[in-house]
Image 1 (cartoon, helix red, strand yellow):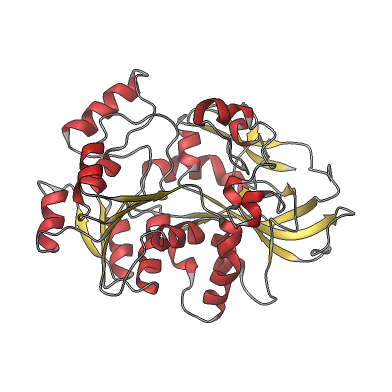
Image 2 (cartoon, one colour):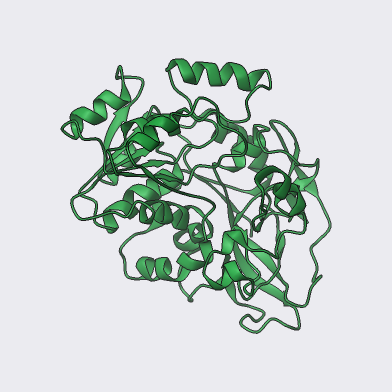
Length: 390
């Protein structure tokens, strides 16, 4: 089968690889109909996530048709169309039983690697390095889905792929980021970044009762999309200080909650952002967390900082004294996708939201390598890429 494979930093190739097969009786094999390139895939493309190996199949936003079913699978049958969550839960461990699927104890066969780095390991992830299990991703013609009864959502007939594909990641991720803010009626929420997850967080914040959402970015195309979703926008290239601007917009109090939807590769003009770039370039820093620093500084006293943006290592020059002094609450982590898929599907079916608004590019798999470059280099125009497989 054809697959998009990681070949090294800034190098993605279309390769012919072996078709997946049933390995465990709880597996299914899925013929992929649609997949997408995620912003966090760019962390792999840029070489920021360790333990990638040449030939690894990319992708963790995937849906398709079940073509083979393991003997212990109970909920799925051949012919079902399913959306596949990016995180892999076993369905039976303590964390899965309390809907913390991205913290699963059993789905990562390489859990010893994150345990050394983080103290404990989390769930396996599709297409996201060997530290997270080395699972083949979904930017391919077929994919094996382990623990398939847990890691699938059956799509009702008649719903186009593009309406439900993002239940695999960015819609639940944006929704959980907003939910983590503990939004109350009348709140102001500030969102750093206006990429796909941020776009979903903006709309989710309004669904959860926010009065105003402020999006911060410097790509005009993304800011216009945020405005279309009802957000007030700040282009950080056009203001002296994002924090001063947020204080002005909130009467000096600061946003009730702040969402860092940027993560480890933040851009900016501050001294610390410049220092991050230099240190990362020479291998003295693992992440560039300037958006998170700003979120901490800007958030109101007693507010919440929600972090859906991916971080991978150790953060430098964090204003932790400000977080302590202001009594901030932090909520973060990989999304418990399975928890949100069905409720958010119901939102889509009810007409509350059509997540396909975020799509700007549609491609075939052979165009994947160039699409990665475009997504990385032209963030204003290229916001979300969908790969049509069949």
